[in-house]
Image (cartoon, rainbow, N blue to C red; front, side):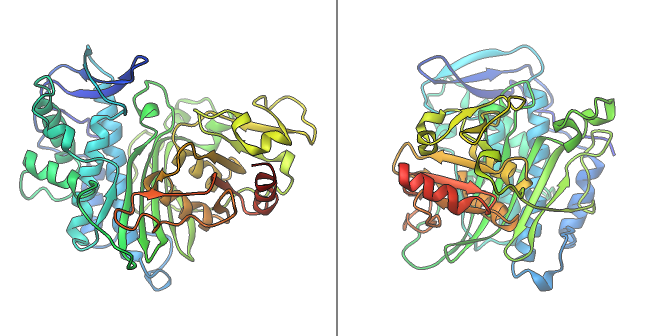
Length: 434
């Protein structure tokens, strides 16, 4: 099944941050055809399966109250991962010209494209369920963007059109912008009553996405019902297989053994499947799922710890009790912990703990609030894999604390994500030293 390489419109763009002033930069790439008329066979198979309600989940609908929603979410995230891979290949090829905009955040064509794509896919099947997501189209609609906003919208629209399942009619730029705004801050207003809604992080780890290397990034989508996460999907195109992670296989085939889709449903466990086959092509929805579990480490100083790239060990209360090292080969005693700063984005750490490659992720909240999309899907995946997620007081994350927007959470101190076995021990240590 040939993989379709995305063709973007003239002057494809990537937005990246640069310099100490963290200004947004637009990377302008050479022209290419505005619209392609063929799609990959795997994409067609995925469309047929989704249309027939046959996206294969590893458990029957009788066991899962939100089976249909999860199937749609999994299909949408898989499409979004394809968009990311194709856009990145296009954006990292050709001669780049750089334009700068004043901004504080890092955004790419793929961030907007993924949000528009998933919004369109979910609206087809669940038009009454609102979407809470990171992006909105305000900057794209701006008229003072160095004449580049229109070109950027064309790039996003082309990426979405090449991956959306419904191709009966052409998408206009306005269709794409409206789809993005379905998840924007002004799209839905909640109140104190319980609600059902989607939470989307189009690309968690955008800095990783914008790099040439295989730094991790995640597309994360979750369904929240009455304040509780009931289902979720994480897709990570750069996730290395166990053979690569353990450096056991350096063959050509192993180089394609990347990419993972993780799903979770309340009471049904967490499951994973590969995004690519041995030839580097995207797999189809009927591929094998594997049950996923956290690791079983029960000794604090023998566990593996993840920290955010922008946080240091001395910011964590555990540093009062333990030293840390990043050298896995170094002998450690009970006063030293093994830490890793490898991964980009919070959801990448949730994925790592849920998969069993790390025992603990500790995050310090630098501000009073954190964004819900950076954590929501991670909660259900870790919990269904056997782990636990709380704030530093040991309290569950309150997804309804932001009564109006459901966009912010307010964890006390920070967030503690563990394999469950270690949770109470670490929570007590953090509370005692925070």
